[in-house]
Length: 256
Image (cartoon, rainbow, N blue to C red; front, side, top):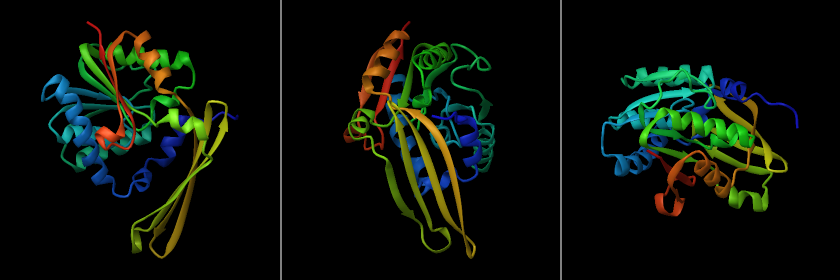
C-alpha cells in the first residue's frame, strides 16, 4: 500500500467534516449525553479535567465542555484544531486546543487530567504495536493516578469477518442542504484504506470531495492487551446495545 498522511487527510476535510453527520450539532449533544455519564459515574460529576487527544473539529470535546467540564482538545491536524477552536468560540466555550500527535503529547502537562477521551475510531490510526504502545503510554502519562481513558472504536471483531469494501451511500438533508456520503475500503491484511467521498449541494451547483486515510482493524483483544501492558486496570468494554452509541467503547483506569 502507498503511504498516506493522516494529518493531511484531516486537514483537507476540516472545513467539511460536519457534512458526514446528519446533524453535527445534534451528534455533539447525543455523544456528550453518553460519554459524559460514563466518566461522571466513575469520577464524580466534577467539573472534570478532560483531555480529548484526537479532538478533530470538536465533536466530543465541545459536548463535554457544554456539560461543564474543563476540556483540552488536541489533534495532529492543525486545520481541525483551528476549526474546533473556532466552534468553541462560536458556542461561548472557554477551551484550550493544541496541535499534537497522540504518540507525542509532551506539549501537555503530565498527571493533570481526570480522563482522556479518544473518540471516533482514532486509535486504529496507530498502525503498529509500537505506535499503539507509544500512544497509550503518552495517554497514561497525562492521567492522574486513578484517572480513566475512554476510547470509541469500530467493531472490528465483526468487521474482520466480512471485510466490507463499501459503506453507504447515505443521503442527508433537503433542498440546499442535500448531500451524499459514501466510503470505499481497500483491504491489505489487517490494514485498510478508507476512501471517503462527499458530494453536496452548494447554491445551484453540486460539489464533490475525495480523501483517503489508512486504519488498522484493531480487535478488542488486541486493544485490551495493549491497555493491560500499559498498566491500565479495570478494562471494560461497553457495547452499543447497552449505550445506544454508534461504536463499542473501552474504559480503563490508570493504576496508582
